[in-house]
Structure formats: structure tokens, C-alpha cells
Amino acid sequence: MGSDLAMLPRLARDLTEPEPIPEAGIARACELMRSGRLFRYGEMGADQNDVALLEQEFAAFVGRRYCIAVNSGGAALCLALKVLDLQPGEPVLVNGFTLAPVPGAILHAGGRPVLVEIGPDYVIDCTDLRAKARASGARILLLSHMRGHIADMDAVMAACDELGLLLVEDCAHALCAAWDGRAIGTFGTAAAFSAQTYKHLNAGEGGFLVLDDDDRTARAILQSGSYMLHGQHRSAPAADVMSRWEEQTPNFSMRMTALAAALLRPQLHDLPRRAARWNAIHDRLGAAIARSQHVRLPARSPKERYAATSVQFSLLGFGDDEIAAVLERCAARGLPIKWFGAGRQRGFTSAPRHWRYAGEQGPMAQTHATLAGLCDIRTPLSLTVQDCDLAAEILREAIETIVSARAETGKTGRAATG
Ligand SMILES: *Cc1c(COP(=O)(O)O)cnc(C)c1O
Image 1 (tube, rainbow, N blue to C red):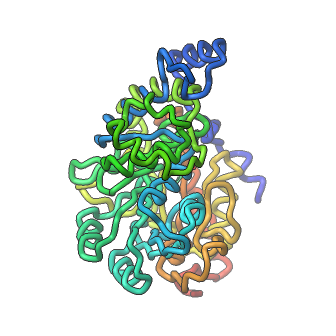
Image 2 (image 1 turned 30 degrees about the vertical axis):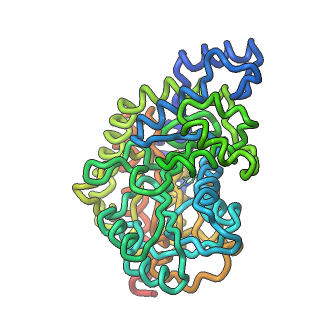
């Protein structure tokens, strides 16, 4: 990389920087630590059960009857599949643009992932969904609202009805999102959320399962590991429903700690304000990036409401080496960009071809074509308007540099070489 870069302004912002925990959360966490009572259940009952309160609040926030807090988003997905009676080796449909813990949760629950193609706008392709559902005989669709990109839920629900599919929603990036006024996380039989640091709520680790059905909720509570102390849940079906399942349900120990709940409760209250700020940052950066003719942002329906903690875009007509060069140039100016088309999985970025443990999936040509140019910039709430504009300028400069290098050497990008 040339020394010319040293003359250009750098983005002096750590894009991995999370928000601080609200003071109320810190204070409550200190109280809990002084008491030593970090387990969510008190053997003799609990004065203030932080996890039980959070479950109630989270269920109300999303608009579901019940919530069970667990130790990760992946654990919530696993429990969702368990309470849908997933059988060993049973196929589960899942869109190919997602994060590794999603095929991981299917395998953890004993199922077999069947990947479904995505289209150029990053969301599930309902034609392939129908084909894969029929070919596999699957009964469950795990729809991952990856990076908060919401599929046409009218079309997805129509396909589920037609094919008799039970829907589980992976909402790890879709808290506060909606389709046509209806909250994401309320479409499926069950939905899972994450409170890992790089999601909308941050406890380091944590997850939520939401659902409406009494029996499935009772089983999820018992499976999450409630040691017959489930009477302390506030978001739970009646005692007789619980007791029906007590001796039939194993304990998988996936509980959330009181400490995590203490950190999360004040964040949940602040979430609508944060979501608005996240979107302002996303829209500013997205619009600035989209001005380049070499970049495309996915089309989004007017029915979609999102709360984006990162920006995704596609680099158009570049070869792999060129994309690598663009990203290297950006990184040298302090702008780290993730790339789903990279040969090796790195950090949070991976693609179906890296999931060999998921078994043979056929070519997935459409998904790979979309992921080949798909890039991702994290947008922490600390990002200012100036940062957004500088980030877009850094990307534009890198693209122009690589494109003009191509013109000089007479080489062409992906479109002509492929
Ligand atoms: C983060 C994430 C998960 C899982 O969350 P963990 O809490 O890390 O287990 C699931 N799906 C998607 C799309 C995610 O980004």
C-alpha cells in the first residue's frame, strides 16, 4: 500500500466501541455483587428478581405473551427448536445469509440445516424456500433476519401457510424492527434475540426466547434450567401447566444471570431512543456510500422498519483481489470493513461455504454471488455525522483508486472476467 495514504485523513474512531452501561445498571450490578446473589433464582425466593422482571419487560416490549431469558442468542434458538419437538436429524430450513451460531443452533438441537438461497437484496428467496421445503420435507423454517434485513414477511408467511411450515425467527439483529407495522419477533411460533455485546442490548452474553403458547413456554422454562424454582418466573403459564411438564423435561442449564439482567433492564428502557440514533447514523452513512456508482445498497420495502447497528452494501463488478485491495486501503485509513465474500471466515463474518459441518448443500450459487461483494461497516452510537462522511469518503477514495489502477493495467473486474 503506497505511502500516499499517510497524507490522507484517518477515521479516528473505534468502530467496535460499545456504549457504556447506564449508571442505573452499574449501580444495581454493584448491589448484586455485594450481596453475592448472582443466580437468577433464590432458593428461598427473591426480593427483586432482576431476570424475572426483565423477562416481563422484554415480552411486553416485543409484544409476545412470554419471554424466557437465557445465556445467549444461540441458546434461545436451540430452545426454540427443542420446544417445536425437533427430532434427531430432522431438516430445518434456514436462509444462507446468517451468522454461524444459527446453523450451529440447529445442529446443537439435533437437527440438520437445509440452506435456502438469498436474493440480491440479502433476504430469503421464497421460490427456493418452496423448492427446498418440498425436497427436504422440512416442517420448520428458521428465518434469520440477518443484520436486520427484513424479508417480505407477507410472502414468507404465505409460503409458510402453503407449505405448513412452523416459523422460528432469529431476531439477533432485528430488535425494534417491524414489517407493515407488526413487530419482528411476533410472526413466528417462537423468536430468539441476543444480548451479546454487538447487538442492540449488551450484557456481554445473553439471549431471549419469546413465544405465546403455554405448553411450549413451560417446557422452555424447564429446559432453560429452572431447578423447580420456576414459581419465581413472572412471565410464565399457570402452575398446573408447569407441573404437567416437570417430570418430562430435561434441564439444559441455559440460564441468564441476575447480573446480566441488571445491566440490561435500563438499556431496554432506553432502546427506542438508541434505535432512532442508530438509524440516523445508518441512513447518513448509507446514503453517502450509495453515491458511488460501484456500490449498491439493497432495496428496502416501505413496509420495513429497521433498527440498524451496521451498514451493508455490495461492491459491484470487482474481482476478489480488487475487493481485498479496496478494503486494505480503507483499513489503512482506520476504516475496518467486513466482507462476506472473503475466502476465509473472520470474526463475525462467514458464509455457507465455510460451514462444512452443516453437510452438503448443493451449489448455493445465488447466495454466493450475492455474498461475493457484500460488505459490512459497524456503526456504533459514538459515530458522528463527520465520522460518517469521512468513512464514506475513505471508501469512495479506495474504490476510485482501485478502479483507476484497473484502467491503467487494462484489467477488468468480476463482470468481464467471470
Ligand atoms: C449474534 C447472532 C446470533 C447469536 O447470538 P449469540 O448471543 O452470540 O449466541 C444469532 N443470529 C445472528 C444473525 C446473530 O448476529
